[in-house]
Amino acid sequence: MSAPLRITPPLFSLALALAGGILAFLLPHPLKLLLGGSMLALGLGLLLYQLLRIESPHHRAMRWLEEENLQLRNRADREDQLRRGILASLREGVLVFGEDRRLLQANPAAILLLGSGSHLSGGAGLAEAFRDPESLARLEGAFGGAPAEWTLGREPRVLRVRALPFQAGLEARGVLITLDDITRMEALETTRQKFLSNVSHELKTPVTAIHVAAENLQDGGSVGTEGESSLKSIFRSVEKMTLLLNDISELSRIETGALVLDPRLIRVAAFARELTEDVTVQARAKGVTLSLDLAPDLETARIKADPLRLHQLLENLLSNAVKFSPEGSEVRLEATREGTRLRWVVSDQGPGIAESEQTRVFERFYRTASARAVPGTGLGLAIVKHLARLMGGEISLESEVGKGAAFTFKMPI
Image (cartoon, rainbow, N blue to C red; front, side, top):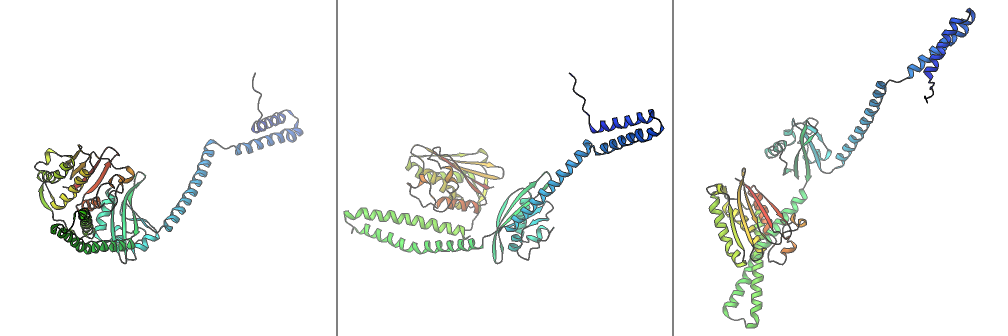
């Protein structure tokens, strides 16, 4: 069955004009104009009007694009206002430099923190905002793809600066810089360091006096049998206190910059073997096997480093590994070359460190749950971290509970 014919307005107008034309042709002269002409004119007029109202697909597409473009512009304006509002309300300074080293964005906090000496008007150059050579060198490194963090003194403030390379889209590249005012934190840290340094220095004298007095009592035989256990307890406590004070003093020297490295040329193979020999006595007493795995290309290699501080760092890691390893297990020291760096790895088969604690093991006085039953000050790994930084290297940890731990120290060759 065929579908019924649908009469549309243009079709009706066309039919009306056609009927008017036929009547104008057939009717006598007076009716030809009155009826036929009128119907023809009306039909053609309606048809023209309706045709003008018909929108082509092209026009519909253009109108849709215009509406979409307007919506996008409105959304971009709202997002731009939101971004500007967020940047303006931040207490941290934010700067954005383009690949041409010209300033693209700076919030009010950045202008306040850097001070009037830095010219942060639109399009300002990198050297106009950061004039000191260290900052410019680190920022150039960030433009090269290496994130950087450092402190910057801008009287009366001390700022922590972070520079992060970024890429927006396929072509837009630059560096995002954040500024934090850490003046109060720096003052508190200086006070803390001075306090610890003074306390460790002042306590060494009475602790030494207690140790000497206890030795005199022991040597003089003036302590009876019932007092022997108390005397041994005094010696143990004095030993713990001496160890703690030495660690505090050492950490304080590193943090305050009083510790200066004395780099020398050292043979990697000879150094590594001496180091393992020094820790072997402790390992044997614990029933732990200590092994050295040295890459063949390091047998004749030499590096420039402070032998005393490098020994201290690695011995700390090895002693820790031995201390927490069960009897019959193995502690391993590996040394390999990794590009322009020397890679040391100290691994053990101990209880391991939970992932939730791994970010805190390098904090001062922090001790993991498995370490609390073992004597120690909680400062050894903090000293390791600071020594690693002082030598221009980095320390990292990989561990899994029940499967041991591996500490990796990478230092520049």
